[in-house]
Image (cartoon, rainbow, N blue to C red; front, side):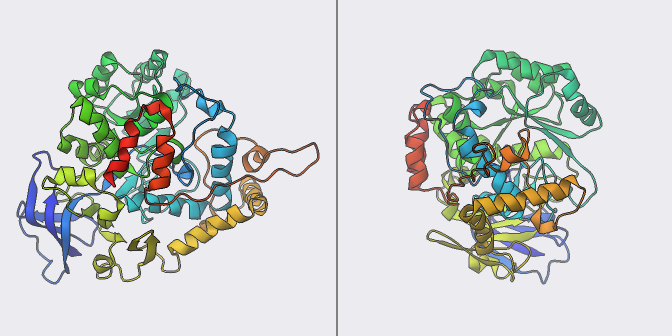
Length: 502
């Protein structure tokens, strides 16, 4: 247990901010109190007192990602001169397989554990404590680096959430999800992604099978209209807004003005490396850029999209509150350097350099050495450009250097990596267990045949051509990424404004 002192931004319904407050974190991984708002709890007399030196907020929650693709760079299809209109289009682009599917699948198959650690590190560096987007493959433990929303069990044996990345095209395909929702499970579903109004039929199908309920989290919704938002509100459902990816691929984003006016609970999601931001900390900046011209949201409302709003969506099915600093809530919190007088503006303006500490389930997992050493003595160094931090993977033999080395081994010899991966698939197909640290991450798109997944076919009888795996993306948003953003005309320059936040 420990006590964290600072300006506490609670994200409670009343918007309480406690200047000079204290957050009491218990050994049970829960928040015991936030003073002076709550009574001082017993049992903390000898607990370490840590000066935050900034703002204390709930950990950031990213309700839309695709984790196994988050080591890849931004992608554009060279032959495409106009924005796409539907999510059904770009998956068939000429360079999609070679630049996205094949390298991601090879890394996930040959170094799945290292890949998951890499993408979780990328998330935590941006202050993320819970992230969605690992619906298939091996299930990481609850005490992994960040919470994996799709598989998080919160110390129970329950399976709280179902996920559908591929859009179901029939009532029969949605039947298992409808059954789960009826039993109180959560359902996270992509729906109506694109600018084509015909995509509204995907949401109407969700209505037809009766899953538009409090447990539903609808991702994207870019083609939805006022009638659809009214239905989402009537069901007390949530919607995840991913404006960067929407603008990158389609040149347009969801009608969040109308959704907000309808009272829909809106959350933010970073999507994935090929068409998304580094983390939800940068996605809120995209929302901020959009909001500068539209003037729909207050700064507090933007911050709620990555704290209390997704927390409330998860609390519909999780047994503990999350996304707020209040007694009994999960002790997932961050410390952020104060950059502005208004605490909400401070978070919106913050970059990776401003993340001072990340605590998940009451455990300090990442942060400044001065803050980590009293709380996580086995944490190991991680260097991110000019940033020097400590990170705790739960095992001192696992370091950032070993994670990178495992992935670079695949990059250095993709042919050998494909052979190793093929052996693991064969073992799995035969029902033979693979070592826990060698698990396989599977794509959340349909898995092709093994030779297509691990290498491209050459001439008849020839060995597969090795997959080209691009260099790992830096964890910190920087000039090279901004240059790539500037080169895409589909967003009409709006996303180029992100460079000004550095």
